[in-house]
Image (cartoon, rainbow, N blue to C red; front, side):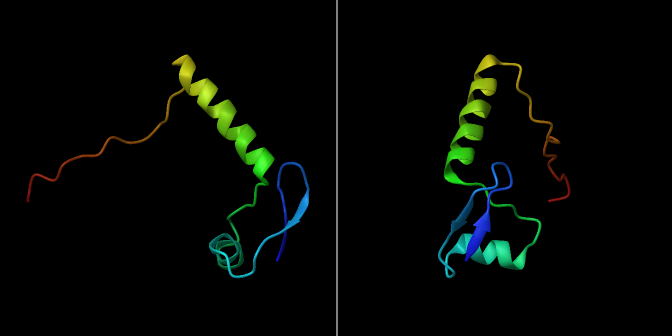
Length: 67
């Protein structure tokens, strides 16, 4: 299966039977990132997280009092 990186537009081929290929075929909202873009984004995110200004806006989990 040939896929195109959404950031750098490099066309690569991945195995048709891989889990990533299945996700790309069945769920069109999933995007493919090449290995270099993926590691660059991961590295920059970890650097921002280390500064202390990085916040994830997730709702806190609430306990159900009925159980």
